Image (cartoon, rainbow, N blue to C red; front, side, top):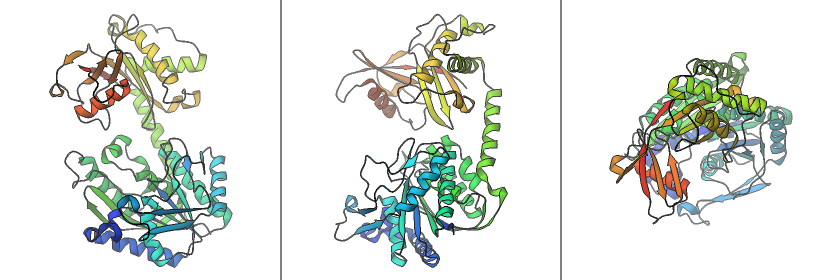
Length: 463
């Protein structure tokens, strides 16, 4: 046996009567669909249920799998007394070990390490509450997500499927996750058009069993949509790699800006055309080629500087025939690196410290790749996957209030004595001057109540 059924289930706490207190009736279609999924799982009678949850322990570069032999959870954080609701599960330790071994073969960091509370999270409790009503004779494997590339999530799903084959177990996969968290019923300050669009596109993909769509959502788009459950769905898709599936979207509802989708995927025959990671990698390679074709001289210089340093260990000399605008002018410069849509390094200078813009890029590019304290230095195997951008800063000017700020147009510089913090403009998730200033102050180490001055600046962004 292997993966015999896979299901997407949402996890709004309000759906449980102990919390909803009647409010759960607002998403009755979701409740009905979750009960139907539980009925289908009971009919399969799995040995083990694998559940992926966005609210389980999450590490940047590591998948946590079921630490220990058992776990408990309750709803006390939602005001429900422990005597009224408590859940206990037994973990499938042998299956956990096999998943971990398979993941290691493919270079995926996964295991049972934990330095946080290991109690059951609501992303696990809510789906299991429905399942337990109809079937309880199973062990559990609970898996957290990570900020590793989405391709790693898909490969990790493949590893789960391979482990199921090795153990000859009857496995059901439950991908716990809501859809957009910023849909049309959200509060005005959280609503995004991307939230509506994401829910429309992801539910269509669920209905059609189009797992390639799961992989090819633009990262900027999904962040604006608040699509936190997507990586849970991608692990599930990887577990069904190379299989035809009988797909069904049972329901979709949106309430308070959160999309709730319930879907079923029953694997059928093998199908080489459904090896979606291979297709995704070809599309990604083509996309990177397109980006490199359109790189301007600023970006090409940053790329040249980094690649030369990583390959030789030396700072490169400036190339010949650079534009005069790069050689005759000085400015502060920030160089940013992204890999698979995620930040991989960013360092710059507020005011120029070298003789011209070109030299500023040459120096800051190497620092962004090797000295950003948030990341390990870039290594040679990553170079083909990195996308670069260069921001050239204008002279900053003081402002007296947030009325003079616009986070899409202006960056901010906050100063209190020797403390200085800078934030570039047009950053994902930074959509108000107040949020912009808050982040800049945090970077500077300026605490609440401490006085500070604000300056704004513009950038010319080169991609």
